[in-house]
Amino acid sequence: MGVLSSTIGPRGEAAEERAGERPATDADVIIVGAGPSGLMLAGELGLAGVRSLVLERRSRRGEIPKANGLGGQILELLRYRGLLERFEAACGGPAHPAPQYPFGGVHVDFSSLPDPPLRGLTLPQPELERLLAERARELGAELRRGQEIVGVAQDDAAVTAEVRGPDGPYRLRARYLVGCDGGRSTVRDGAGIPFPGTVCPEVNRLGQLAPHESVTRLDGGDLDVPGLGRMRAGSFTRTDRGVFGFGWLTPETLLVSTAEDESAEPADDGPMTLTELGDSVRRVLGAEFPLGEPHRLSRYTLQARQAERYREGRILLAGDAAHLFPATGVGLNAGLLDTVNLAWKLAADVQGWAPPGLLDTYHRERHFAGARTLKHTLAQVALRRGQDPAAEALRDVFLELFADEQPLLRVGALIAGSDIRYPPPRPGGHFLAGAFAPDLALRTDRGATGVAELMRTARPVLLDLAGRPDLREAARPWQGRIDVRTARTVQRPADALLIRPDAHVAWAAAAEEPGDRAARGLREALSDWFGAPVQGG
Image (cartoon, rainbow, N blue to C red; front, side):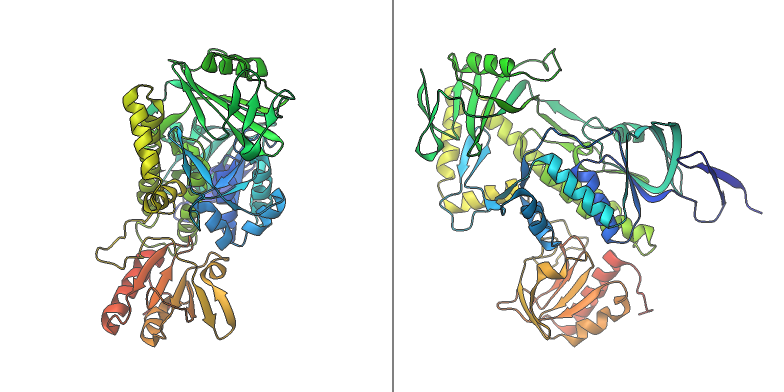
């Protein structure tokens, strides 16, 4: 008879398990944190048939919009999942091209491009969390609020979380635990994962305000301000005391921001007041800027940090628990993309078909992506902080470069995260390998469709674009695990594409690639990403 051990459930019940058997667990995956990343992960796991339990320290959803919208590559992913229209309906308008974007203290102007590389969706974070929680529950996730993680431990079979809830402490066990609990992650600290980096020596203050009655809105969103004259919307005013900027969130809501050098975070870490924002504006400008009724006020510092590793055994990190970037507007995009990369790999392991090392590719790929985002946001720190003539000249040169189309497209893709191409496990592959799959317009026996529609169920897809029965036959032993589709498209980029559940290309066959070589490459890719053949093969 095997040795007995005990798992304590949420109400204190003991569930017995026997050594050598699959351990009794309360969930396949415990997710710590019900912010956007944790809720997105729960939804993606549910789509893959994995039961998750989301634990959130807060007793209710936050009402303060820490973020005001979504932008970048995550919008494409949401479209591929068939979710973008749902999100657009909730905010009353479609995702829209971003004509301008702040980059290191200058504004990159995309308005001259016929197809701007950046799009945005105005969606306050509380509404985003509501939508993501709704989707996660629809797909079977459980969400418990008022639950604080006070410790984590793991063995070869499972992770144990020590939880403090309204009714007292208890334990939970799961196959895996993912920390989506922010920059001060308890999970990361409990797993002993270092989080190196720096805090930028400046304090940023932001106000979302109604325009003051004494200011006049001019054409283009500029303002006529008493005592200051015409001030251009979207521009930054630099003085030796800091940086001031303003723009429009909506036609009725003005964004006002300041950045001041301070050697440490403000001593007063309580809620910011309108008086504090006004004092900061006065220090920077040396003049009064009338402020209207506030809708939201915040004060923050920016950090540049990245966890040394995103995985420690059965404990993983995503979102702000894994990285903090010294620029706004990119962290949410990166965190949500982390979870899409992770979910299908966790599901493969939980369901027992993951090839060796699959879960390690989460760290390899998303740490790579995070490091790239950290690099360009650190470059923005250097670009925006200088106040001397050399720094001004540097910003002027950047603006000159941004007047040309190719630099504009490149920096737009960099900010959006759409330029990420994951390093392939084998050298010498097709140029699309590791890239986000293009949304090709497809013609099939069942009518017109597109790559985006094929990815709604988050199933891997082998897309035969050239009528290659040899490749379909090579994939036959995996057909219980992947979907095989035959289609035609104009100007096909490859004879066939093997697309992962996160919509990245795992493998591609070059046009007219010899059958034996293409079939061998496909079988290798299928084994690398989707495990041993289902039917022998």
